[in-house]
Image (cartoon, rainbow, N blue to C red; front, side, top):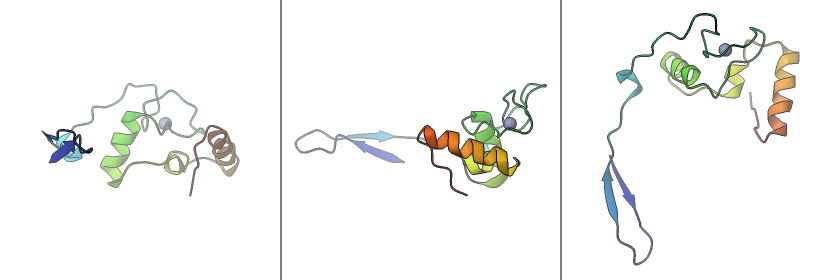
Length: 98
Ligand SMILES: [Zn+2]
């Protein structure tokens, strides 16, 4: 894949060769025991997975073929827990859509 930088007027252009690595080329090692086995974070089972966890993102992508959203991360939660997290994330500028 080629990426072009410096496309502005009068500026020189640099073409970078970028090697893309497909997710199938990677092996995900098991996470530590004693933490959530989905996101590798120590959290109560009734809480959402940490959507920001790289382990969670890689594991989810491998299983579902797409990157997880916060809605995915809290899919196993009660409606009350989901409402709490949706509101708290909204306060921090993160909109969660179903
Ligand atoms: Zn988790």
